[in-house]
Image (tube, rainbow, N blue to C red):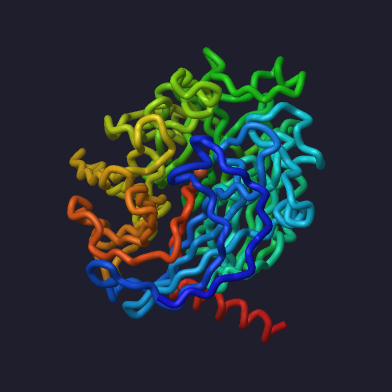
Length: 498
Ligand SMILES: [Fe+2]
């Protein structure tokens, strides 16, 4: 395989036995281009035509304090599949903090687990002391890829095809944007939220297809909260206020300790897409914490929301992990016990009804994107290795019948979040593929793998060799070439008419 290597980045990272700086979480510092990936097994389906992007977290410099897996710098990995062939490239996201640390040759910011004052430069995020890495999420809106941080920061823009940097988005408000903005391909709009430690504690906004901030309103909360994801339907955006948030007394001393506040319900804010604060409909539900929603839609008088309910949002520490016992539990699905769940908000009565959809401990799910914001039946979730933030398999849920398919990767092999790609010309909701990157600790290699979404039990139907072993991370996205062509035509037309 032809590999074009880019000039190396500066790194000061020293060898360690940190659980999230070793094994499948060993940071990668190399940036390459591979014009054509070698097929190890099977054939690239001819009815796939798009780009898979994954954001991974790669610590570049020796941490100033205790490292958390979410502290690493963003690296975007791309597999571009078209005409039965696939290319690969990967790039660090050139955030201002990444560039500053490249110049300094060392870490300038502390991480999530470090005491206030660890950073030697003014910090970012709702926390206020973190590095703005953009290393949590990756989405594509109107032809631009946006890398974002869970704690709120800038929206770092990249060309989804070349991965070239387009800088930071000019429309991002002072409080930044959280990870997990949501795109409505039908209208070309992107909905987002942010949160902070100062009143009103949350905002909600809409960016149109031209990249203009067209709507931005406060969503007043009782205090600082830690929402992670939002959901959208054609008419509503759904934000949340959950009882897992920073202890207010400790916060006064700049100690950021998340705890479950007993007796405080979960609240959902349903705001019309272009609504004002007074239009918000609040719904209460049983206390929980939810990292990710899978889908939401409207049905009669109800708005339906699906996602992963946590039975134990404040998990017991994993004592065997010593000084990392709390951190290890907070990133372990088996500790916080996340299960697929449905909330129904009745707009007439104001009532919320809830139902559990599966007993499996899962998270990081995907649906057929053609069914986003509409009633959907299938969810493809990931399973994790107990005790670890490492995806070791999949569950395909049929939420209508309750039937589940399970596929477990071989021991020591870990997946990425795996978007569902509808097959070209498909009519059935589960007719398509899952695409993922695999990290194989047995061989020290990585692959891109494609699975049949209708029958995941077969395992990968196509495996492509990657040029290096990648580091694990969090989110990913699939974008159709057809969508990129439409977005490019839209921008060309705007330029011509201007
Ligand atoms: Fe997330």
